[in-house]
Length: 265
Image (cartoon, rainbow, N blue to C red; front, side):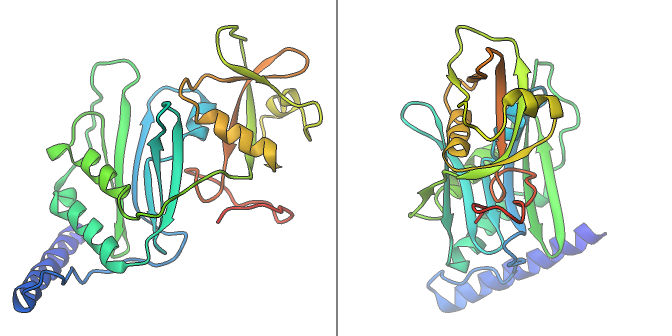
């Protein structure tokens, strides 16, 4: 029933906006709906996750598009060498955000349903779209195609919300380590002997540790490389996968510790 009222409200508002457009004749009037402007509120998020992957991979991966209530938008793209870049911008024009939301709604978002049965293939990827309007958070999850290829269209539009993005290169985050069998064919780099903790201790404790400065940035960049199987080698010879979770960018990041000198935006 709540969803029915939401759809009716959106339909009325969109029709009212269309009526205003007809009166004005310039097509500039947009829908009248609003969203929570709090910087921690996720207004739109597009995500994708393999059903089977290592903990380090899942922690390192960033949702392909997230728009927060204050207009901050973060999205992923690929460099010319195939590595992943995370970009960030601030959308200051409410009309741009409204047009983005209207496009999602017009594509039929509130009519879509979850795809409950995964396809018969190994490690299928779950794609999801989340929209938060009128105090209702709705997420639709699918394994295969979306109506009108909407997921890809919305993702492309997300990357066009601002023409002045900056590259995200965090200088701090929560780090965890997972010991793996060493693969001589995989790219690797050595964990510095002057690091504030060893990877062995980190993996044994199964806890996250807050790490700042250059080494945190190196882990972030390493996780974005094209191959995705970079190993970090401890001075005693063991190999590890290392993950970094950054507040304000990672999916479920907890806040930085009170004593942190570097933190999220």
